[in-house]
Image (cartoon, rainbow, N blue to C red; front, side, top):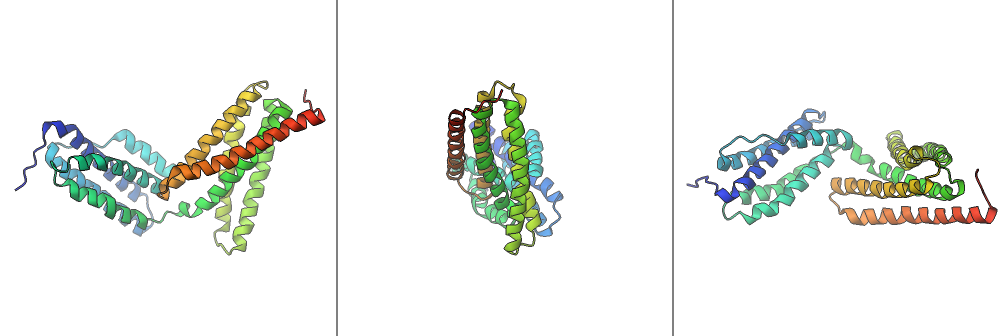
Amino acid sequence: MHKFNCPFEYVDLIEKFQKNEVTASRLYAYIAKGMKDKKNKDVMLKMSYEEKAHSLIWKQYTKKDIKPNEFKVVFYKFLSVLLGYTFVIKLLEKDEYDGISSMEEVKEVFPEIEHIVAQEKAHEEALIDMLDEERLNYTGAMVLGLNDALVELTGAIAGLTFVLMNTTLIAMSGIITGIAATLSMAASNFLAERADGNENALKASVYTGIAYLITVVFLVLPYLVLPNEMYVIALVWMILTVVALIYSFSFYIATVKSEKVMPKFLEMSLISLSVALISFLIGLLAKFCFGIEVG
């Protein structure tokens, strides 16, 4: 009969495994509680149960009750509301997969690890694939809004920066252009979705419009908060914001779809920044060719 004795040098590691499982179990139970769809609810409850079962295996070694990571629980609860439960689950599972290498290093000492690793790699991945979150059906609409805003507005603002040379005027131009483009983009997407026979065309256009408008706010913000003469710093800030937005969204999409982040990030960055550079050069050319001065 196997005796559950934990060598001293592995105590901290096993306690970490147990804490991670308890934390995941608590979060899955919380997410399940807010679900209306019975199928999704049952999947989440099963995942919560399995994580709890894993924690009990580790408890046989630690001989103690370990509380979940409360900060992580609160933070991931917030993320589940903001970005959806699929993103949070995939993020949690990614953390667990990253920890699998640590488990495999000590599987000679702890025979139970082989079972846990196998379940983490196969069974729970299958359960996650069973989930059906409504907002993920509209990632295409969000990508459309984000991409369009980044390409159009980044280019427009970059082009105006050295023509107007005044952060207030640039911000006003960006806001007017951005709001008009948001309404135009949402309306165009609605008509396109209707033409394709999508019954949820209105909802898709709303997701497109929201993604576009949020992008507008982030891009115009540097010009709103900086003094009029600091238009160059505002431009640099905006470019850094563009890169951060692209990476954040690429990370979100890659996480929920279990894809790699960098290919999407590099593709979107190349397109957006190339358009911004071309528009910036056109703005400079217009300023010098036509002698435009804004006093």
